[in-house]
Image 1 (cartoon, rainbow, N blue to C red):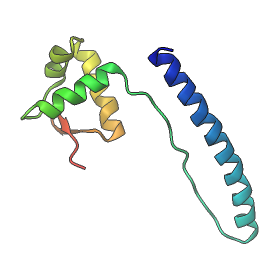
Image 2 (image 1 turned 90 degrees about the horizontal axis):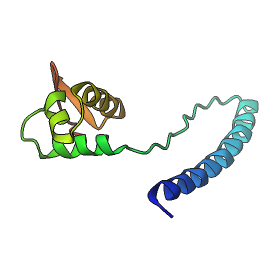
Image 3 (image 1 turned 180 degrees about the vertical axis):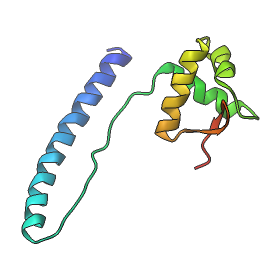
Length: 109
């Protein structure tokens, strides 16, 4: 079984668990609604970080100063445009923060 097969099997098990949780939450919401209590629960997302995002994070962690998409592109062997997309996704995930015009660093969380 290769890594992709393992990932697919893992994702399928997680989806099955999340479906069961969704069903339990729906029943709980009905009970709480009947009691006049309002609840909001946001479902989590399970994602697989791609190889380029992992490379970008590793580069940023090793860099002493904030890096540009061009720096990340050179280190990862990808185009600067794709590096920008990868960095934007990492910013959206909260892993990376933009610290200046075209400058990125690992988030300090």
